[in-house]
Length: 415
Ligand SMILES: Cc1cc2nc3c(=O)[nH]c(=O)nc-3n(C[C@H](O)[C@H](O)[C@H](O)COP(=O)(O)OP(=O)(O)OC[C@H]3O[C@@H](n4cnc5c(N)ncnc54)[C@H](O)[C@@H]3O)c2cc1C
Image (cartoon, helix red, strand yellow):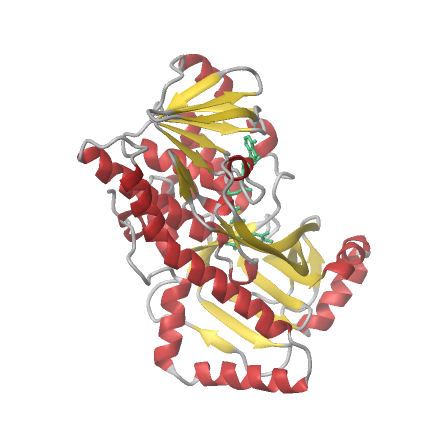
């Protein structure tokens, strides 16, 4: 694989930054730094072949417009052009009946749906070829050390990497976060997300549907047509934890019948277009996203319910902010691990991550309350937003990631 050749070519073990975790966030972090002249080690415990296999991650991600600006500014639009299916409208409903609350922007799309593996492939191809990134695939981290003048990571194969700053991008269970003793608030929802894709009779018309049931939301997200030309959508169906195993074991026919009962023929006849996968759902929020010479990005810093498709988008906002802080710091001659820079990063990201976590948690709980009265209240709430254009445009700006102080990359500009 390209990574082996690349590692051989990069004999220097000192780089500006060491990034632990090479998922979507870690690879984007490395690329974002590299595009601004900052070198990094990118360490991932899976090897590249395994990580790029189609079975590795069957999910799709809604990439909101500000995130797309960033991916374009990092030069990923060439590889990703045409792969994302635009969302032209979002329809939110309480149960399968009733008038939906719809978000339809006047201008461009609300975002695009990408297969995670398409994002991963595009990121990997750029990262593996970039001279400023040394990739270390297929090795976990055995030891991390934070000193007054720099950091080091010793890999399980004995290789020692050094740098000025450590970035943790090692996901929800982040061993780097644990090792640094960073506390977090965390709870599990009594939910599991069943993820798959379907082909269907009726066109989706680029509408994303979010249908709320007391057991959890069912999202249908528009995808480009399947290779045989059939209309296709991605499914994220949140079910009660106790029903998760049974939903995976149901025959294809049984599963589709159950789903049809929930969506009442919205897309016509359906067939499964991908295997079913399951993800346990929870929320976690760290008390701090920095420590001495350490910064957390992506799911290592925060994890939310996928109800609003914001997790990776939040991670991109971390990466854009951290890149800007480090580039500004370097212009002033500061060391990348300087505590003032890390404080600026932490301050910049704290409100946004908390607000999005709170909003997704409230939404999950609000729609999870069973009973007729709560249902009536929710329907009235949806109708009130539907009839208030100002509120709708505020929600749309939030959904597109346009509110708050946006880092330059999210505005489509280099730092
Ligand atoms: C069902 C579902 C649907 C979702 N839909 C959306 C959506 O539509 N839009 C959106 O924005 N977000 C969505 N999300 C959230 C999004 O998928 C995550 O926020 C994102 O994938 C997190 O990426 P990450 O790189 O931070 O973490 P991860 O993907 O967990 O990557 C962490 C990486 O670190 C590596 N690692 C761990 N430990 C070590 C170690 N010791 N040494 C080396 N490497 C290590 C792992 O192997 C992994 O590759 C969804 C999530 C779920 C569950």
